Length: 244
Length: 313
Image (spheres, one colour):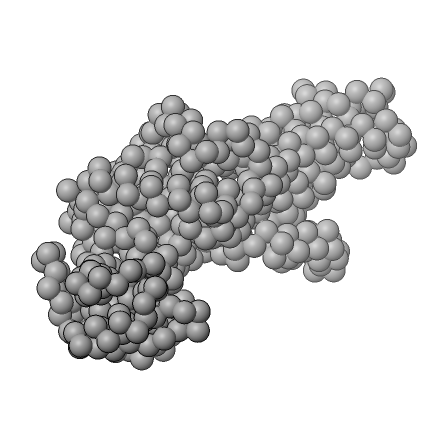
């Protein structure tokens, strides 16, 4: 089969379902909305308190990562509504090809939008901070912008892999969102050791000018990549042998 | 010519055998009705042919190859398994386009099948606004996309209005006349007998019958003639003399068991009895089918023009 044709078909799948296209757009829209809301109001006050000047610029990532997870989960779960996967596999019976094509299109779309979202967050937010603003030339800033985009793409893939495994966006999102908003946050304050290797904590190291602890910025992103790879592998093992 | 070949196919889900040692061949150039009560294994067989489920043992091939071996399979087999499978949030056109694109089928075919199935005016509407009948049409449109030599439709008449049923009968007939293999599942005998040329009957995963519709009717339906006459006394005497059993119905009609209209007509003509009404009745087809499937009656090999021998059960 033609790989390009299958990739194209997967892209049509994403853009033709409101939930998945909406989540993808939200990765950018939420970033802009939160940035405008937060930095135009309390941005300077927060900057006065000090802290890591680069990481402070990426506060909206707390929200955009939820959109990224939703994008991964809903794009995959649309295959599991009403046995849609039967139709998909009738058109592309090579399961490995279908799985790889969907993953690749998700990764590509999430990376493009994630990078734009990440740069937009940084540049827009700083525009409100006057004397506290840091430029893209600030040490670590460019790395954080690029890394932030990659981080969002990896979170998309993490959710996608889990959705292939669990076959439900609701299940995956009700697992991951509380985990990221609450569990990771709480555990992070209690047990600093293990929590460094949680997918969100590790990946967000790349957003710091001066990452603390033994996990470096790129290594942290690597840890998140391993989480995503593990989820995708589990998803693939399920898809490969399951009757649909 | 592309046929579907099923050999010793078995599919077990836990302890239940959904398909149990099924061997049969679905031939081109005719409409094959795939019959059986719910749970007989019809849909499972279709999923096994498409490689969606893995057989416990045995094989299912299309034109001698497994379905997954086709490079652009929508051009080989068009299938409608579940009319609900199109995502509600997509438009009909997007649903068909993403399928067409994956198999490098030109966009123009999308418009053609929308036209052929009467969905062109609704092409831009989201599928969730569709009635069941429209979803069936969309599923049929998807099956026709690749202009395939083999069509496999699971209960395609479900939810269609009377006009839609006439339409699908004509469509199936045309597709078979074009030399395609047309497999249509149903759990209704009378409905299937109206459009099928050949029947394959399953119950509890096993093959019960594999024969032309005419043979099934001859074998299982009990012929009976309904007649109304202006001179019942003479006609009854004449029919009894000819060895027929005659019963009087409540509405002044008479039924002649085991006879055909031409025989009764000939008797009446010989006697010069005026006949007001004369018709063959085949009342027992559905019952025969129910008895066959419910009782698990074994069906002995029937003469069949196909090389397929009904299998021992």
